[in-house]
Length: 212
Image 1: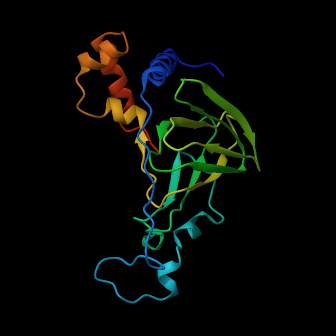
Image 2: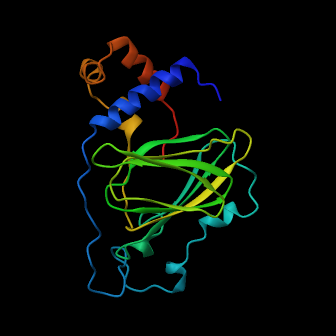
């Protein structure tokens, strides 16, 4: 699969970033002293509170045409608050990439339901651990480490489910964290040993890109 020059440039810069990106600070969910947490100003709940129905939309859904995520965390499913667990469903069309990112508060355990993926993460010594997955395979991304998923099959959608060891795993998306914030162009240009026009082209290409 041939990559366009702009894609090659972006990947080169991202690999340079991964080589210098410092390890993320670690954090975990605090233990709770009750059976479960209730939202503020709520004193009584029934079984509905512990039921999440948004994933029904995925049953019988058409294959994805764009990167698509469904999250069940303590924001979308308040019953998870204090339980130390959350879930995400990632649906990827052929050739799609979930760009390098990290979850500072949780390990991620991915199960590939259908299709094919290349996955990988970078450890604190800048070593890349990458693997190709088939349906039924599982892969673990250690807490806080930068990782990615790539559907390398151009015509086959991929669907995966990820469990997280936190109700609020957090998300640091490397492209948007760098190129959609207020870091000065000259600082990014110096960091990547390139020029300001190149940084500005990357910023323009990152705008509107889907992020996990």
